[in-house]
Length: 126
Image 1 (cartoon, one colour):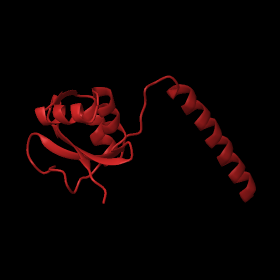
Image 2 (spheres, rainbow, N blue to C red):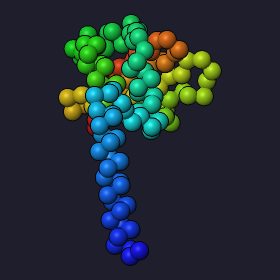
Image 3 (spheres, one colour):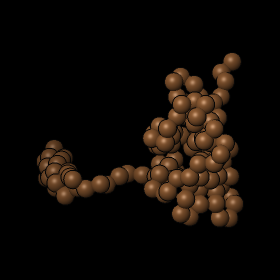
């Protein structure tokens, strides 16, 4: 069998597989959260969120609501070098993002059933 025929059969089967896969997965809430950032953020977002007093003060000062904080977590990047991930029990993560052209950091304590937003700090750019 010639090489061009082999490539044609391969691409034909691959195309049929993609169509079947799209058919079976359409309408389902499937996600591809394989990276460490995506897994950590998904784990935080599925839990009940609580806010510390310091976080509530920051939210009031910067006119943030809980939906905005949710979106900041969802679109943020986890800084694992500044996070405390090697402790037993509740791990503390630092999530970095920008809001209105200002850099901010959210420090979140991720326990078994709750995720507590400890601090929300805006970073001054010099």
